[in-house]
Image (tube, rainbow, N blue to C red; front, side):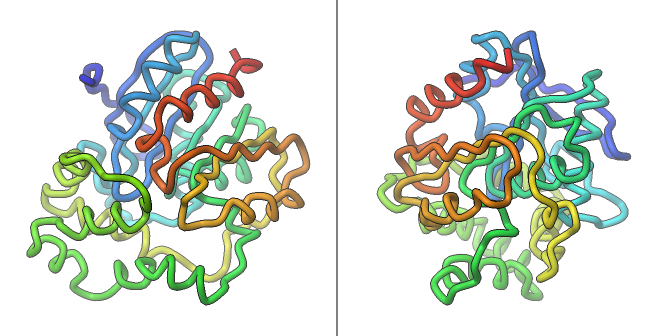
Length: 278
């Protein structure tokens, strides 16, 4: 499926590349790692067709978005990127859907400025404040350590980015990952400095959550949980106490990249829950 023309916009001191389709209330779809705005290639037009303006940015450091000169990749900075994009796009608020690192950014955006996030939707990541660091979970997220190690970028480049394929396959039990699935992210990380930028997200991880994520979520929220994901759906149920307004858990088929593995079901459920925000 071909993407719409690439657009660029200045927000939070950076020039962001993004795709846009449709008209109506703004819906911002935010990707994770290893991924790009192309991850929403099926979701974006389907949601736009139901009466929304859907914007899918390349997050900071992912080409063609700029590499930040300040080297900041912490969750609150990513959350401020979302808030700045909403403003730069001429809106007071938006529905925000984040996957993987995009989910972390969305949680931060909702904590920093709840009035700017009409509806918080996350996929594949339960609220960080409610995660319990069990041995099984620590093994599952061992890439948090390996991607921080000195020389990680060099090793990934020397293997022609094959590690990205390994990660997608590891996080996708039951999915025969299509050939070429990671081509877009490899292209985004090949230009000088952009892989290092993406790994900077992992270097910025702190054992102490930012204040934005320690606060309870004060906006209507929904989380997509994949039934074969490496994070058990029960983790999303345990998070209920961290939400002060409505919170729905939608269990769907698939693993970490559920919106790619089973796009029809994901889109059907997403369109359903977006109905009241049209």
